[in-house]
Amino acid sequence: MSIDVDSLSSINQLQAKQLAGRTWHVAGERYRFAAYDPRYPGDPPWKSGGEAIAYPLLDDRGNVALYAKFFDPARVTVKRVERTLWMIDECLGNWSKQLCAAPRVWVTTQSAGRPDQADFDFACCLADAVPGKTWHEIKADISAGVVRWTPELRERSVQDFIEGLSRLEQHQVLHGDLSPGNVIINPAAGAGEPMLYFIDFDAFVCSRAGRLQTLSTGEGGTIGTAGYCPPDLIAAASTRAVVPETDRPARDVLLLELIGFDPSCDFEEPASKWEASRRLSLLRSSPLVIRLPHLLNERLPELSHDERPATRELARALGIPVAPRVKWTTKLGPGHGAPPPGTPDGNRPSWKVLRRQLPWELPRWNMEKFQPIAIAVLAVLCLLHWSVVSGLLSLWMIPVVAESVLTVVYVARAGMAGALWCAGLVTLVRVVLADSREYAIPIGRYRLSLPLSNAAAKAGRPPGWILRHLIVLLAGLVLFVLVLTRQQVQSP
Image (cartoon, rainbow, N blue to C red; front, side, top):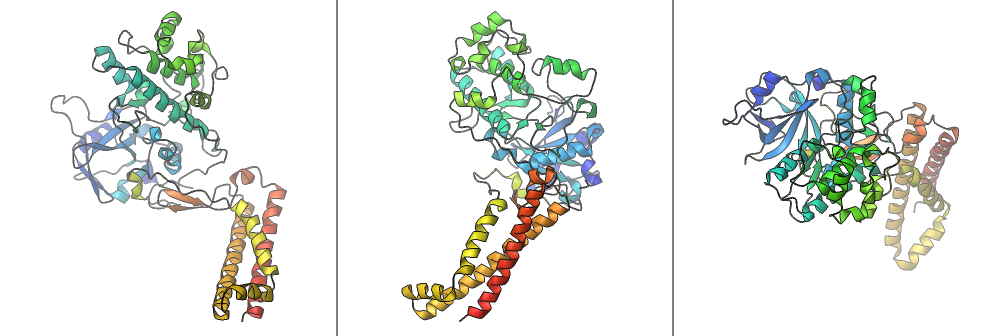
C-alpha cells in the first residue's frame, strides 16, 4: 500500500509558532491551538521531544482536549507513518484505560482543512489529552513539598502501572521508552478513574505483527532513556543500529521510584543509581514489596531480561485480572481504521475516534470456526425430506402458517449456503494471491475481520490449509445448488 505524499508533511518551528492561538475546525468540532503565555513569552506552548512535538488543542471551555503530534520534518518517513497508523488501527485505548493517550486518528489539512489564517499544509496524529503531570514533574513536586506522596497514592500508581504494562504484554507489545517523561500521573484522580497513563509510544515493538517494521536508532528511532533502559543496549547503540528489546529493566526502575521515592531523593536521579542499602531502606517500609519481592534483589539494576519476572506475573501478584496472550497476527495499516485520507486504498477516517472509547468493541468473527458448523447445519437441512419437515410443522401450526414458515426456512437456507460459498471463494482467492493481510471491513473505529488466516498465509499457504478451504468452497457450492433445486421441486 502506498502512503500519500501529503501524509508525510509536517511543520517546522516557524510554522509551529504561527499556529499558536489559531482555531482549527475538525469534523464539525472547533479546537484552538494553545497560545503563548504572556508571562513567559520565550516558552513555546507545545511540548518538545527528540522526535516530535505535542501541540495542545483546547476546546471551547479552554481545557486541553487533544494533543496534535507533529513529527520532526527530518524524521517523517513512510515507516514511521505506517507504525503510527498501526497503533491507530489497534485502538490501544481499548486494551486498557492507562493506554488511552495513544494515537487515535491521522489527519491531514487536505481532508480536514487548514487552521484559520494558516497558509501551509501539514499532517499529524491526534490523541486524547489525559489529566496530570509527568512522573518527572511529580517527583520535583514531591521534593519541593507540593505533593504528598502517600502510601495510598503509591499503591494506586503501581496498580495502574502494572495493569497498563500487562495489557501491552498480553498483546505482545513493548512500549520501548519507559521513562519518567512518558508516564503521566494524576494524584487528584477520583475513585474508579486511572491515576497513571502512558504516553509517547513511538518506540514500540510488536512481536506478533510480523510485517510491521521496527524503527532502529539508525533510522531516527530511540531505545529508551539512560538510567532506565538496559545499559548494554545503550553501549551497543554507539556502534550499530539497534531497537528496543525489553521493557523490564525500565519497568523495575520506575517501580522502585513509584514505591520508594520520598522528598529526600534527588528527582533528577533515576532509581537505578540508588545505592543498594538506600534502595532497600526505602522499599522495606512499603507493604507492596511483599507482593513484588524481586525489587529487593541487591543486583536488581544488573539483572537481565530473563532474570526478571514477566509483568503478567506481577499483575497476578497484585490481584489484577490477566487475560490470555493475544497470538494472532494483525495487518499493517494504512487502509483500515483511520488511514491518511486521499490514499488509493484508504478510507476516510471516522471522526468518532475523537470521542471517548465505548466500553465495548465489535468482536472479530472467526470464519474458520463458522464454516464447518455452517456446512454441518446445511447438510442436515438439505437431507431432511420435505414431508418430514412439513409433517413436524403441521403438528404445531395450521397448514397456511406452516407453508409460510417453510418458505422463510428455504429462503434463509439458500442465503446461508450462498454466503458460505462466497466466504470460501474470497478466502481461496486471497490465499492464491498470497495476500497475508486480513480482509477487514472498517465499521467506525472497529473492523469486521473476514476469513483469511494471516498465520497460515504467512507460513507459505500449507497445502492442507488450502485443501480444507477448497473443500469448504466445493461443499458450499454443492449445498447451494441442492438447496435451490430442492426448493424448486418441493416448494408447495
